[in-house]
Figure 1 (cartoon, rainbow, N blue to C red):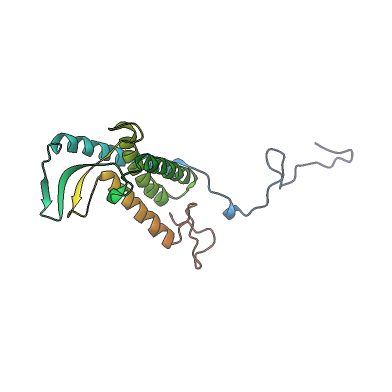
Figure 2 (figure 1 turned 90 degrees about the horizontal axis):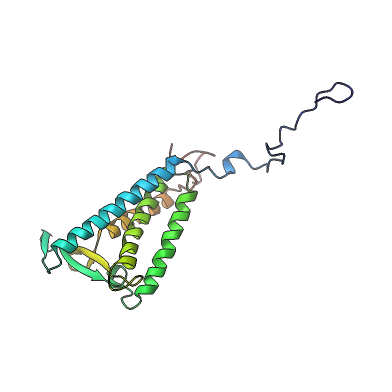
Length: 205
């Protein structure tokens, strides 16, 4: 509109579309928006991990439940069924419900991080963690002896040192990925945070 002298009145360039002033934060400092470019890889990797874990456990329960042991690499790697009331390495055998609660908390934290990330590599690593966690949580809630106290189905024997499953493999791979991203200074926003990185340089470019 115009004032009485005919001068055109316009909104300030710094006003936001909603009428409020811009916060003045540099564009590079704002959190990157969530996009399917990160959410879809996260969901797909998590789903594949979960299906592979539960499918392999169904096979193990049907093929190894009679105590049958299948050698894969001699004494280094074999398949034998074990129902684990605790965590990896049989930690917390007497605290199955506590281990379930801790697993739920960790799974929720992973989901929150995946929702916030703008990095595809973070999304893939978090997807592995999430799918693996869900695989073992399914056992906790839906397998014997009771909901919340269910025993995890393990069947991959590593030279007698411990027995694990596909979910454990997914969790380990996801953790390795997160450690690598952390040491290479790739943040959740997908930007390099290293001392020599250019401002605004995308780590996923």
